[in-house]
Length: 322
Image 1: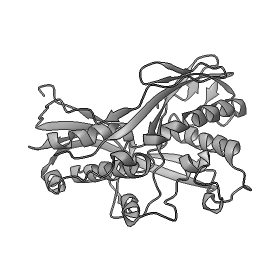
Image 2: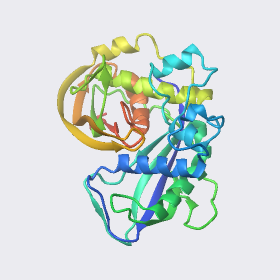
Image 3: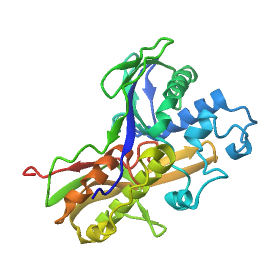
Image 4: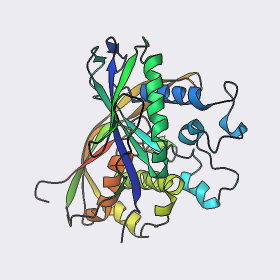
């Protein structure tokens, strides 16, 4: 039996060329890109006075900003919908993959790239994303408001969707994940926490990545994305024994540490500290193959809190003999 149902995924790479040196205070710029994207989308689409909450607007179910940045349960939600988000906000239907998080400076005239993954039927909003990042180029990015030119957007096949002009080409169809399993039956796997991963259990963030918590975080995120953004693939419940099997998986060793990132929220006008674990952890168990589809999909969706701007990125590494 499957541990997770499927999810349609559309992945794109944006190429930008700054007019002058683009310098950021922190090498992790996912939060900057996400915040600037929201500002540009709101400037393009919002017709209400500043600071008006989206639910107060009659257009909130069709406005691109509201759909992508402040999705709502809505008045007709079902109890199952509320349960899918466990009392939290509806997940935003995209993830930004920021560029190399060891680099703070991008030279003038050189292309810097970042990824954008869109889930389910919200891939139809790709033109809105492109228009917003193009507008953002004329406004400026980073603390010095450096302007840039959106040079290209390509899809997961490498095909050009946007070449810097005024027209768009249709992207390749989304890919439905997870792919068919390859029959691997590992007795151990290693999970790399590439960007700070914020797994919250019982009101507390975890600094030790126990396997059941990892599975629970991945399952909750993927199920919520399916329900709200790809409902035709929603509805497959995990086997009842899945969580029992997760409890049997042993954490052999964890080489992780806690990293704090600082973020200023324009909407809330507050400084926020976003911490999470980075590093890697190795797990052992007899039934790890049952979790591979879930974890492979989590590589794409990310897991834990604040995934939209690139936190919670994980990679699953199989042992050489598998």
